Amino acid sequence: MLTRVLRLLRPYHEHGAVSATLLMMTAIMLSRVIGYVREAYIAWAFGAGPQTDAYVAGFTIPDWLNYLVAGGTASITFVSIYTRFLAEKKEEDAQKTFSIIITVMTTVLGVGTVLAEIFTPQIERHLVKNFTPEQLQLCVHLTRILLPAQIFFYVGGVVSAVLLSRRLFLLPAFGPLLYNVAIIAGGLLFSRQLGITSLAYGAVAGSFLGPFLINAIGAASVGTGYRVSFDVRNPAFREWVRLSIPLMVGVSLVTADDWILRYFASGSVGDITRLNYAKRLFAVPIAVLGQAIGQASLPFFARLVGEKRLGEFAHVVNASIYRITASSLVATSLMASAALPLVDLVYRRGRFQFSDSETTATYFWWFSLSLAFWSAQALYSRAFYAAGDTLTPMVASSLITLASIPMYGALYRAFSTVGLAMASDLGIVANTAAIAILLDRRKLVRFNLFPWQELGKVAITALLAGALSFEVARFMIVGASRARDLSALLLIALTWATAVAAGLWLTRSQLPGDLRRPKGTIYPRVAERQAEDLSRGAEP
Image (tube, rainbow, N blue to C red):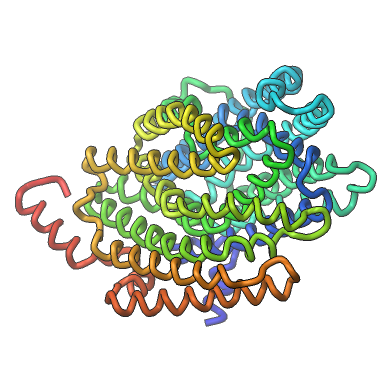
């Protein structure tokens, strides 16, 4: 057993779907733990105030530039193209495309970085219109430090796509961990001299060490070469551009949500920071359930489509979405009931007070309600990308994002900052539903093959477990001490676990067995439906 585990942890071990998923989930969980340490350190050292608001807002322009120029293309469209070349034994074409994309897009991103450095003050005035002059000045300073990191993120993303296409998941999985460690190190080593600016310098160093350097070393070790090339007439490069433009031009609520939250919350001191803390804590289960499975699944989705195994593709997508949606519903019932002791235990220390914990926990409670949709959309989107269609999901997501902005504003005016968390939930629900409906109408992933009855059993169990746990939480004393927080969290978790186990048993839910079921196994009812479709001559 130990030998098998050690073999899976070799940097150049080619993974299957199951081992890749487990590895990505483990690595992302470790990265989120380090990310928690990072956020906890920032809360302890700097609290939730004007300078932390400026620090969080300082990431907006760099994130926006990376999204506009890169748009996720490094890890999505390039994986599909590179995987196809490898399957067709066209190693030389894969290498040429890699070199062209690196050269052209690094040049474009470099020009964009220079322009953003010049016009940062003018842009920031519109993004955080309610900042004081001192906050705005600090935000501009931090933004200019952070901007060059996007070049390392982008190049590292393309290089990691090469490794993912070869089913080498270890190095890409652990790049984010080094990034978070570098931010913490920057704060610990230089915060006395540089203040919160030390975190920005740490982020730049981390973007070089983690996303870029570790993946570059790995790609070079498997024979990936690079030479400067501006051959924009290359057919594969043009295909990449065609697939990438929708991701570059479109704006998904998955990314824009953070930008919109910061825009509306900039008028209330500390709310950007508290929203960020709640969202970062909420991002842990999203990363484990949605991001990890999505990243691990894309190469396998692309391979099934490339081999014209569309029936198996539809089943694998549905089975994966059922698993993460059901798991998310169960997790939500715990997160919502344990919001306050969890947030207080995680963040309250130093300058971060119990009042900050209460406010952050309220935001976290609302965010937790949408976990299933955040997790499911990651797989629904990748199903479209694997099928070679990036335009349809991005047009739908962009329209929903634009339509959601007035909703954010209306709920913010009606319920203050809590309304922003509500709007975030409603927006991601609409986004996920739209992509799922489009997949069904394109006959790529059909609703009638989804195990709705099994999901219903899990939903009822999660609702009852959440209600019982919430009642227990009402009588617990939180905030008096770490021991009180921990005992409250443990009692709530014990109640939740007992209720979930009883509910799954009483409803005869198949979820425990489904989570252990290999991904290639077809549910009995799904097999029947596929046989019926084939007998009628329909596309499976």
